[in-house]
Amino acid sequence: MANDLHTVFDETLYPYINKGLDGVVAFSTTKSSIDGQNGELIYTGYNIDVLAEKSTFEEVCFLLWNDRLPTQNELDDLTHKFQARRDIPKVVLDYLHSVDKESKPMSVLRTATSMLSETDIHLPDDSYYEKAINITAKLPTIIAAFSRLRSGKEIVQPKITGSTAFNFLYMLNGEEPGIQAEKTLDLCLILHAEHGMNASTFTCRTVGGTLSDLYSAITAAIGTLKGPLHGGANTAVMQMLMELEEQGKDANAVAFTKDKLAKKEKIMGFGHRVYKTFDPRARHLQKMAQSLSEETGHEELYRWSMDMLNTMKSEKNIDPNVDFFSATVYFSMGIQPDLYTCIFTMSRIAGWAGHYMEQMEHNRLVRPRALYVGEKNMDYAPIEER
Ligand code: SDX
Image 1 (cartoon, protein in one colour):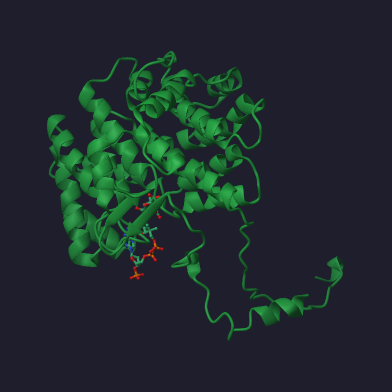
Image 2 (cartoon, rainbow, N blue to C red; image 1 turned 90 degrees about the vertical axis):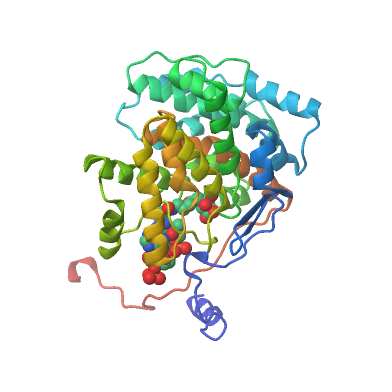
């Protein structure tokens, strides 16, 4: 068997490994298309710029799960289901009350999402659509509840009205958000909902490919998104901006960036495996970051961001990704930095669930190969002789 593997991985057949699966096409999908050269993103036929202007997060969920836009009745029906299913079960509430308040919110969200599966034990295994609605409805409640509990505040029960964005901000802050805050968050949710075969979506499809359940796939995807090279970067961006804040309002973001580059450190929120130009989502977030930072008296955040952006362009020719300006947007909305990746999660559930359903339609086990580079057929020394 060992010899067979060696033959299969003969260098003439497999001359190189695509480290990080760079450039490998693993699945076909109708969920999204990314043009990395021209900075274009399409969700199921619709340009992200059009959806940003005209759509809502709820409508984008329908689009990604049905491959078409909803009629008014269909959108109302999905919205009502989201509204009616926002409550979280007692087992999750007990966990949120008991978990260490110092825990990282993404870790808490990952564990709580796994626990949610018990709410659906009465549903048939293949009720992916209903389960996707349940998870999407409940993630914001979990995030807001943990955020309040760790600050010693009472949990705010979800309303059975309003959009996902409205209700999340209401549960988080204990007061109804204004229309501008709701629209801002709704736009963020639209922009983060789906993005091709990113690491967490690949994880989600790989778990689904074993015919494991949606909760397992989403739990694994959350664990993947959490990493700072992926969705965790938005929190890391805010940490960089806070480092600058410590130096005072006159902090030099150009020198800060150059210094990090000289030390071969990554500048979080920059670079992308697919985009070789400005991430189209970052353009929308940049506009929001500019106006919100001015409105809230944090102009320096935007000024530093632009200094970093220009320095990264001139020094490395690298552009910002979705995570860069979202940090300033969420900060300006008064949201705690370690919740930023949780907000990414409550949006990306739309894409993950869409991909999971697609995987179930055309499933084949995901099982790549590894090139063995170790020794073979070594003598087995008894333990006392090693
Ligand atoms: C997301 O895939 C998706 O679609 C993800 C996402 C989604 O919506 O799902 O878009 C969300 O995850 C955005 C990315 C968030 N991560 C970060 O912001 C972390 C910082 N960025 C990087 O570490 C990096 O750019 C990655 C991880 C995003 C991409 O990594 P790659 O494709 O493996 O690129 P690389 O690390 O091999 O870098 C290539 C070159 C290197 O220079 P050289 O050694 O060739 O001279 O570019 C440099 C890197 O050092 N580089 C950076 C850099 N990003 C790339 N240098 C400094 N700072 C950076 N941020």
